[in-house]
Length: 426
Image 1 (cartoon, rainbow, N blue to C red):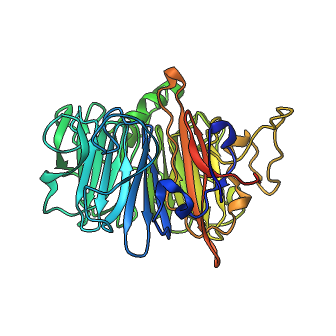
Image 2 (cartoon, rainbow, N blue to C red):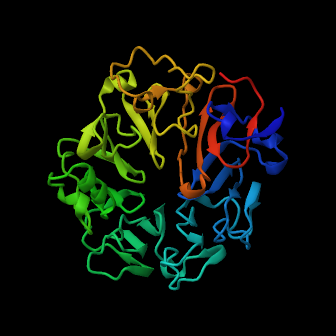
Image 3 (tube, rainbow, N blue to C red):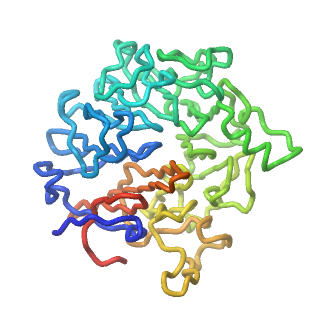
């Protein structure tokens, strides 16, 4: 196998990365599964899990030390991180606009990177160049972390939600608190046990054990007022403390995800609801803004139940019960893993005739046929920032497993090289 770099111009179609043991940049790792986090900025955190260990590999922008390598130089090739906690104890990795977080199996939280608003929860606002244990949370095991642009939401193993960082838009869920908080604080008014948290640009969500979804932070409200003039927005779009999302009363949510200015919720019956801004067709609707949750019709997923959903900054990825992987939303940097326009004649590519919803190609959930049969989609995300310099980055990574092998697929749009197998595009 030959591992070659390619840029976004060649990265619209899923490309098999194959067995990562063949890459000199990840040599010695017997990869059984991949958990990938392309953060809300321009850096990537990747966990390779083997039979006996879990290792973190990092690359990308590092202006604030968010890669945890002890310096601020950008990293172009995956570099292993192995000096901040015992190998094998890594549970999850995530990141925000310029900060990163790692949760260990024991519930420990390690953080690094940009900290001007206290988003690392360390009690100060200085940048941290290496992953550092969040001491204020010692003795409080963490289950999950969601990083917003300049804030962090923590979920404890007991189901309590904590927050720290910027509160300029009420994204910490503490309406009468200061504009920033440097130590994680409990969101006291969220009294129900929470099982899942998510964070967008300036809003956050929590899914409770009883299947309710709460949202806070006014990030979506400004778009709603501008795009829906004269219309009264629901309370949860303008709330600075957790407010129950109306329109989901007749369903039971199992998780919620957040993009920059949109949200989505998956129910226990396999239905997917979306709301917020629809600038790039990520809500599979012709409306420019959806103030209330709207269900994406089942025929958009070929009448199959959705079993998992992930949100990028401006696109979504869903997996159905048969293992089909659907993508929709922003597509100009290859986020969807499929070409919408023929490079020769600039003509639209024929859409799947089984999908009755007819709209712009990027707003129609469409399956990636080369990934049919996927049994695992650990993570997917797309982040688009520094637009002023057109330094755009969008990465989606999916793992699929068959009886014979496990492969890592990726499609990417970025201003610098990534790694993919040199094989024929499908």
